[in-house]
Length: 166
Image (tube, rainbow, N blue to C red; front, side):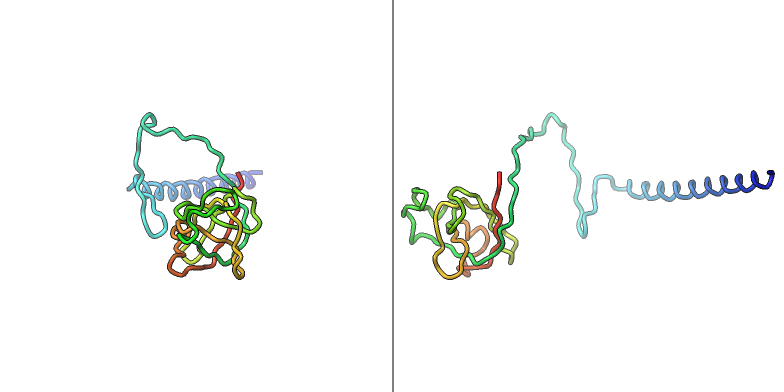
């Protein structure tokens, strides 16, 4: 009986020693981390944290964020001033400076995120016309939308499409 108590006591002492060692190691890491509490390491760079009184912050308005449904990829083109003033399929006058697009099948008024995978730039456009009817293109963007994602120089380009569902 005395031998069993002795081994249990030894195990309890050893367990306490391991616990103390782990606690000291974690405490040392936390102390090192506190040397610069206003700087957070983010990958290769650093970001600082600024504080502000809650009363001076702008209120956050809860607006439901649209969900995106990926539609795939394809070739996009744009049309500009040559069609300015013409009526679109929705009956509105085409303005190349608006963020609009033409698609063959999506419901008019739909919103689509168009992303250029070469530069990861994206733009949200409203479908207000039908087309494109040239080649295997999947969407015709307005001049403003094409400019936002960097398609102006090349005239056409590969894009990823995602339908926004609100």
